[in-house]
Length: 292
Image 1 (cartoon, one colour):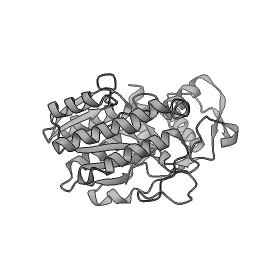
Image 2 (cartoon, helix red, strand yellow):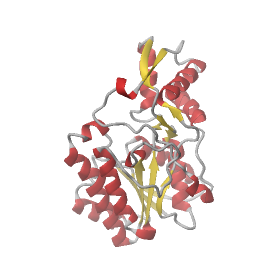
Image 3 (cartoon, one colour):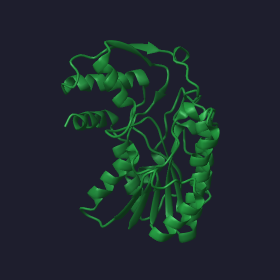
Image 4 (cartoon, helix red, strand yellow):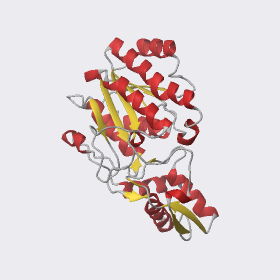
């Protein structure tokens, strides 16, 4: 089975390479990787030529425009990457009968629900980022049995820039600071998401359509930060936790509104043995890797 990964230098792309490398101990996977600088998915000809030449069985699209606030003013760039680029990948996959696994986001919802979002719930993005990601999803869904969309949220890992690393850095330089306490979601370790993606690719019956994958227990950003600091103290990374003030969303204004509720129902993947990951355990793993 041959995999082609776009956005390979991002945190999910790197975790996916790690997960596939482990699989190689048992199964033979060919892995072809392209960073965003090596493959611009907004170049339709380049995408078509590359996928035709490499002839992968599965394309995993981890390339995305993820600067949520900047997208509000840089609409064209966000649309090119998150919508047009995905449509080019989908068309190229259709031409060679390859499967496409595409990563999307909780931002396709408006965040006003009080129960976990189902994959079939009506999308209602209220940001440019969310709107462009939703447009990209449709191109994958239109592939029918060849397309799989995985929505996720609050991704962290030992790679790249993410909330966990930011909280660790601030804890090393400040005695106190504020974190938003009225937005709720499920932190998701990119390494666990990568393992889920590999399981999807290996499945005897490819789970086309839209699915969700995230961490197991819903918390606020403030509670997530407290757990990061608690574990960092336990591992001796910081000497004491900083004093965290709970901020309201109104006290922390952003160009793009954040969803107040980002909990995703992940049960559609249970039949494949894919269950939500233990994000607290994942925090422990990531912190240990950051100091070794």
